[in-house]
Length: 361
Image (cartoon, rainbow, N blue to C red; front, side, top):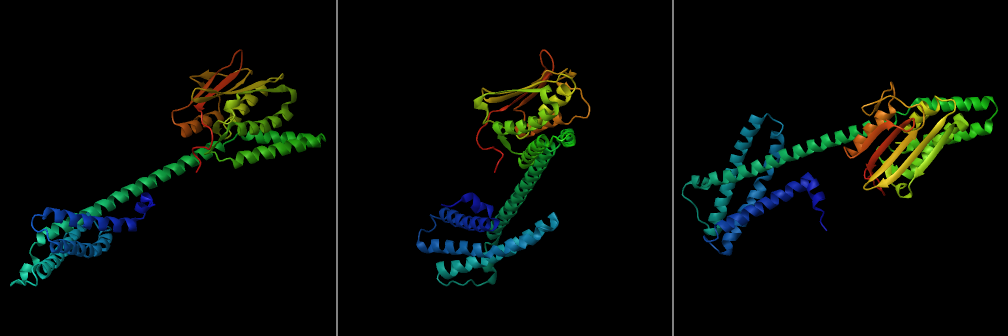
């Protein structure tokens, strides 16, 4: 089975295919146009021989035009017309010889100028061939530029996503290392070792998962469990976590580590700021064609203006919005609101997708 797309991706093969088909088309049109003139096989043979001569004689033009392509436009056009006229005149001579030698059985004209008769018609055909050559080459150049621009845009888009994903709040790492150091000082070596192990697993997950691809929500839950286990060592009984994840939403695809900044914010601004601690609840469910995710806390709340938290220096929440925008366009929502009776509630709506990530190769 011929793969036509691959056939046309090879420019060398594409030229020979179009070049050959073009001259076959010329022979067919010429024969049909002169069908009433002569229906004998000898006339068809002369036409095919002329088309073959045109096929051969225009090949050098291709290599000449490659050089002309690098010149100034006006000079390129002038030299292309001049070379087309020379080739057209030469083709006219070949066609006349074929006509006289084969069709007229060895006829010879009295004047040598007769060899160049019909050169204008031949020149017109060669000019059409040249125009098609430059037109197709220009089209290929435009397509290549579009592909290069698209590739550059895709690479920039991927780099932007990676930058957003890897801008994790360093306070978590610093606080965790300080907590481990404290545990070592007070001889809680077993707890410190468990904390190091969880930190290693969480960091491995965060580095291994490509931020451009999406993962099942189940994997995100496992990573967040590692993160929360680390934080529970720091806050002990002050941190309570409630999971409410519908079974049919666990295989839904979500951006990797999309929940971690939300939970980190809740711990930083709700749990850490109250002596009695607090509760973080994570809900996820499938509704219609969407996956709905909600992260809420019962902390002291925050100042929310036009759906934006009025906090300085934070990059987690703006990064989430940008990542969602990059991955889903306008088909998502990211809402920050007051929780009742107190705290902050963040709701995310994204398309419900399962199976292999559409962004994966």
